[in-house]
Amino acid sequence: MLHAEGPLLTIDLTERSATRTPIDDVLEAFIGGRGVATALAHDRIPFDADPFGPENRAYLATGPLQLSTTSFTGRLSMTGLSPLTDGLVSTNAGGYLSREFAGTGISALEVTGASDELLIAHVTDEGVEFEPVPELAGATVPEVSDHVAETRDLGPENCIAIGPAGENLVRFASVMTFDSRAFGRGGLGAVLGAKNLKAVTFEGDSAPEIEIPDPPEMEIHREAATSDDLMRRQGTTGNTEFINENFSLPTRYFSEYEFESAAGIGGDAVEEKKYKKGACSQCAYACKLPTRDEETGVETEGPEFETVYAFGSSQGVGDIVDVMRANELCDRLGLDTISAGVTVAAYLASEDEFGNAELARELTEQIAHREGIGDDLAEGVHRVHEQLGVDDYTVKGMEFAAHDGRVLHGQGLSYAVANRGADHMYGGLLSPEYAGEIDPEGTLGKAELLVEHENRNAIRDSAIVCAFASGHITDERLAALLETDYEELLAVGARTIERERHFNNRRGMAADADDLPYEIPDLEDAIQEYYEARGLREDGTLPDDRIEPIAADLGTDDGAAASPADD
Image 1: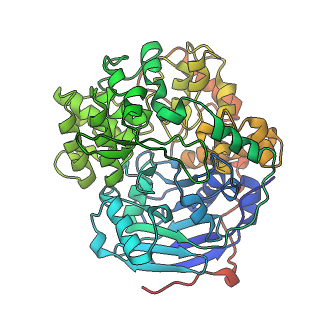
Image 2: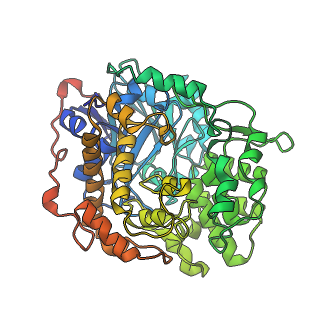
Image 3: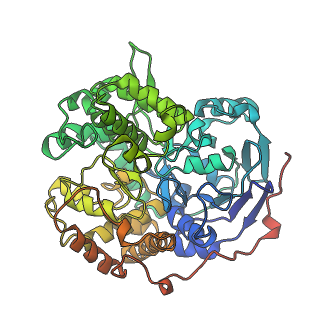
């Protein structure tokens, strides 16, 4: 089975040291990306760690397919202990960073400790340099990119960065790359903020060589280039009106199921503002959405469907330009658009201010800087809903994505049991329910399919493959790319999910955390079906003997140690 190649680079910000350590056993067992990062996080983050403490660790990891030239592979995965959910969370981002990261010769980056001053860490294939940057305190993400360009002659594609939201420990702060691509969900930007790490750059020419099977490599690339999918023109917004008319587009903080102004924020509205093509590294599919409004001058990349929901229907805002402004603001400040938009919507609900897009933007700024009411909203809906007098529309503290589990009951089940909360990218049955492949009504009998989807998505995030590649990188092709069989891939995915569940169990999460803030049919029985399919106890916990540590006591390859650089 193909897997990522290269050592783990550990950066200790307290000591300002860097060490490269072989992790061959971890790579062979977990492929790369999310799988490898989860194995490392499970074994190396203390179960009682404070998400904002120096003992928390953040991981950035690549997969074997980032060393290919095929489409849908321009991504990296990031993992850590979430300040939003208090459990392990993984998120991935596209853009152009993955090849720059691989060029440093490492397979994974581990960040631990905490600095006593704001830093940028510069990672190359020769070592690591730590640059104090007090002048960047409070800087936006583009301002960090400008600094890196001026001082290092590197572009935003070489960089991950946090904005003021991360520095101010907003629990849903993002880590950004390429200025507009987000490691979005779960607040890992605040983890870097707590460590006083403003940015990390990557530069090198030492990428390992991995031979990717062709076919299917070039077949996939050719199909991506010639596809006429609607998504290539409208991104994920292409189905906005279909979902609104046939299922549910959560509206005005979940008080309504349909938004009367969906056409004003849907795919056609977005496509009208699109002024050029956009892509990720090596990808011919080019489904990104560089948009610009000539009248106002606002320019952004997107918004995608989840942002259209979070800052559109959820807030009662029906003008795509207002959503574009919010999207651009979140990118600059370093905020997850889903959690930010839904949290703002909860405040608008409490003040009867739905439709007030200007107020929504003011609140977003206040959240990022923890000013006024923004200081409370920066904690997220779960921690502020009682103060606002609104329902707690979260799972495990994470705000809901757009795909409504009150209508798509299998998706509702997925939200309830997902280790990272109400995130549609974790497992999800939304696609077969939207397509009519399974009945959206009811939860019973869907657990085994959900388990397969969760396992498959874990492998997708480990290889690493874009979620939008499913029509081109089929199960059979994914197995062929990784030179194994599909059942073995599912087993690796299962081991990844188990480690997430076990880590969360050790932090006190069990069956009581697997719940929804609304009722859907037979949820309790369906959850027990899921536990049985996963091999969990009736209380939602994983037996300790199912987990064998693999990365707790890693040796150090002194010959490959990265020297602490000039302070």
